[in-house]
Image 1 (cartoon, rainbow, N blue to C red):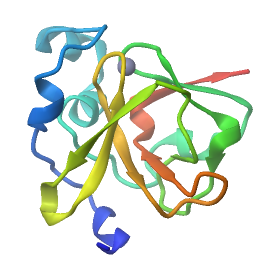
Image 2 (cartoon, rainbow, N blue to C red; image 1 turned 90 degrees about the vertical axis):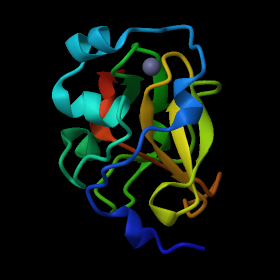
Image 3 (cartoon, rainbow, N blue to C red; image 1 turned 60 degrees about the horizontal axis):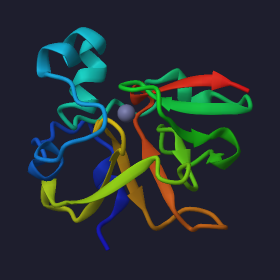
Length: 151
Ligand SMILES: [Zn+2]
């Protein structure tokens, strides 16, 4: 397995061809995405960049509620499945059913599983098989890709 530490830098990732060719229920033009998202969100969600660890306030969000996609408002994760991973990124055990789709990502010489919104196709982060029970999964998500809605 690839050491996880390699993921902990500000990555300038290449566009994924697999997620760009698919049609999603919410489809926007590039100009629309640029209007809707701030530059940091655009770089992460449409360009597959990774935000600097610890940069997003959502990492420290401890209230009960739902994390929604910043691109289309679809609920993605619930706070009860959020855990402190120590990585500097919001981390979850499991997404809401059907909320995200996954793709193989071979960028940066690593084999990882990319996670994106099932409704608008925006890049969210990656999932790793080293999370705590019950799922054993760690969904490592860019905070800027989500909005938090308190319960
Ligand atoms: Zn979305």
